[in-house]
Amino acid sequence: MQISSRFTIALHIFTCVDTFQEEYKVTSDFLASSINTNPVIIRKILTQLKQAGLITVARGTGGITPTRPLSDITFYDVYKAVDSIEDDTLFHFHENPNPQCPVGRNVHGLLDGKLKAIQDAMENEMRKYTIEDLRDGMQELLTVEGS
Image 1 (cartoon, rainbow, N blue to C red):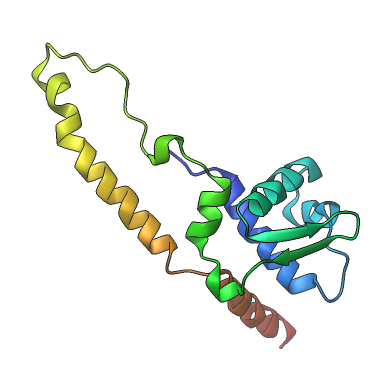
Image 2: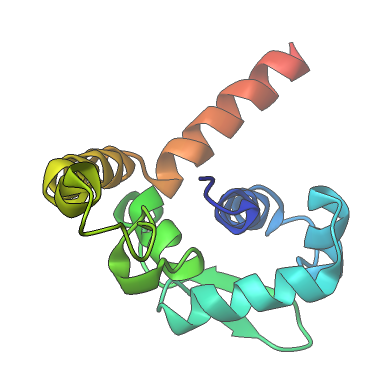
């Protein structure tokens, strides 16, 4: 199991927008060059972030604006926007365990609660981090680089 790269790309997008918005026209091409991926992928993720209500996008001008303060946008918000998981379940269970087998018959009861607890713990941890944390971290890194 692995969360798709859309999540980290979306975090990269927010960081680029915040870092460069005063200096450059932040377009999907600009973002794609920083992320080193195809602009089509960037546009798809921007659409997902926009549909989730996390950003507004001014077509043609490269204007990408968060819709709320960066301290109010959590990693979880971004994750939910771009990494939709089927039935809100992180772990995909194999479809048809054998009901004639004592393990197959009981495996859901054995694992379902534990897997849900793992997913809840991950999502709760994601709620602790915000885009503002990325801003602060980037400013620290740029200050150290400039020293």
